[in-house]
Length: 304
Ligand SMILES: *[C@@H]1O[C@H](CO)[C@@H](O)[C@H](O)[C@H]1NC(C)=O
Ligand SMILES: *[C@@H]1O[C@H](CO)[C@@H](O)[C@H](O)[C@H]1NC(C)=O
Ligand SMILES: *[C@@H]1O[C@H](CO)[C@@H](O)[C@H](O)[C@H]1NC(C)=O
Image (cartoon, rainbow, N blue to C red; front, side, top):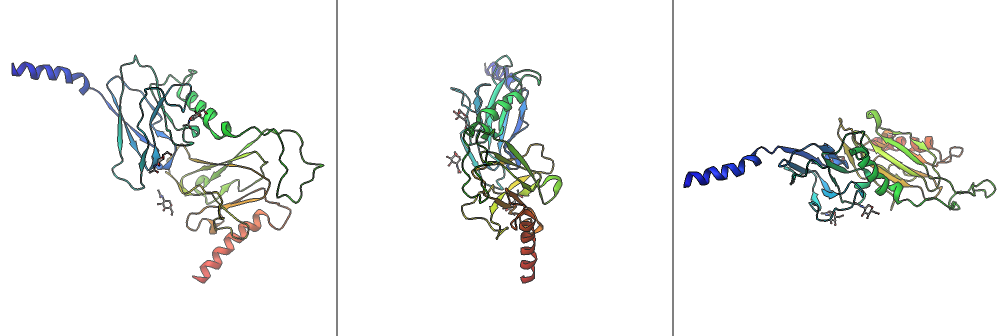
């Protein structure tokens, strides 16, 4: 009697004990990614999500729409994790027996899914219209800033531009452009490019490369001091071997020059600054701004 109960429970447990555990990092290094971005799993396997610092979710969706919870789907809810937490909190997803159909997930935190923070179990191959990359592209197209930004149908009179001339200003609708600035490319303390011009309605996307930089708005006269009520990305630590990079999006509202710097210790003073729409023909140009940032540094050092 006793031995048959043991045999029965062993028989019940046996299939489960073969389930593999697949570890997935949620938001490693402050990035809006799952690492790996997808897994191939068999029924009974367990996908174990490790929540890194910040405040992410794992929420099941359909392939289309992305970034929208699937009714009765899996959801962890928000898991806020303080910096330096160890060990990381974990949530497990048990892979169902669904004939290997793909399962799609995303982070429900504001703007994360639209930046491509999606995950899949058993996605079809790359050449399939429902591949992982196709799903990620769909998430960015539907919920990214490009989707949120209203199309520029009218040209707004620039509020701060002394050079504005109605005779030469465009009167027709323009297509908003996206400008990309790499932050700390190749380990350098620089934005590349460091000075750009952008039209009203355009978006500037700062892409953070390895190290730990910020994008912080300042003013021409105080290059390395945050502007009150200015924009700031906060620190974006990126691992040296990262292959996906966090981004910070800035919508251009008018043609006034925008000045900014990296808030990491000594980076601004090393010249890590940028300008958008600086008037290069005038005294308040990019080189003058960068000079002020670096002069401030030597001035500061002399006094200390
Ligand atoms: C993505 O966009 C859809 C449609 O606008 C919206 O319903 C959904 O809440 C968005 N998802 C996220 C995670 O923001
Ligand atoms: C986590 O994010 C959610 C949604 O944005 C928010 O309601 C919640 O307060 C956040 N929790 C913490 C501790 O920041
Ligand atoms: C990033 O830099 C800030 C400021 O120096 C620091 O407080 C933070 O711990 C750094 N983060 C990492 C992950 O190195």
